[in-house]
Amino acid sequence: MLEAEMEKIGMENIGMEKELKISSFSVEGKKATLYQPLESMVEKKLNQANTNTSLNTNGQTMEARALGGKLSEVKSSEVKLSPHLLILHCFSEEEEAVVKLLQGQEYFSFPLLCINNLNWQKDMCPWDSPALIKNEKDFIGGADEYLFLLEKEIIPRAVEILGEEPTYYALAGYSLAGLFALYAGYRSSLFSRIASVSGSLWYPDFVSFAKEKKMLSKAERLYFSLGTEEAKTKHAVLSTIERKTRELVEYYQSSGYRVNFEQNPGNHFCEVEQRIEKGIRWIME
Image (cartoon, rainbow, N blue to C red):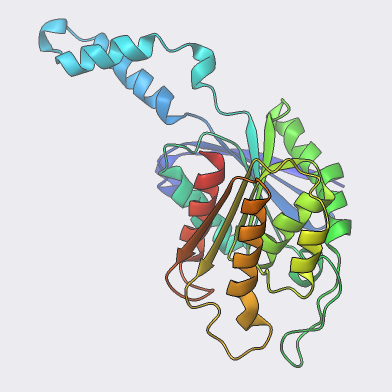
């Protein structure tokens, strides 16, 4: 059962730099929110230039006239929002912060589909694995089941709202969602750009899986990042995170993929939203 509601949020309401059309719907308890920028930075410059050129040329600077002349030559098709779709799995508080960060970026001209209210230790996990800490819940391998829901119901609903099929799909996530983003490349041919931001690549047996199996996705761009302090732990499993991440980065590079690996200062919980934005920038610019 799908429930959808749509609204327009502008700068005056939430202090963002671009107006957004926001469409929210739910699928089997997962909350999906589609953010569509209503005006790209190019359009803003074009509108400003048109305003300037309508002034008396005696009071107009050469720079304004040049800008107006240049932008007036831009075809209308060139200032439309990019027909690409980025899917981001995140917690609700991360979602709000990431969207605010994106609002100030010139490259943010594509629709963003954020999905939360997930069962993280099931939906994002490729197979069963024991809990990392005593008395915590074990990981349940529900990623395949969730991926089916994502491809067959959630994404088609977003595309229906957009009104056109995206030219490509990108997938990004942090921590377990970063693990899922990479895993999805092996189970689906849909995602051509993937960002695993501080991804949980310590996950037992994942490195061997990734090197033994073949990606179904064309994976035009693969982004990885890690905090400099993430591996500095006495936990036997978590302490492998940097070694395993670097091993996979080297493997993908040697296999001919376009890869970027970035290290950020701090531990796993440091500047999460900023790290996500950096990953999105690299795969979407």
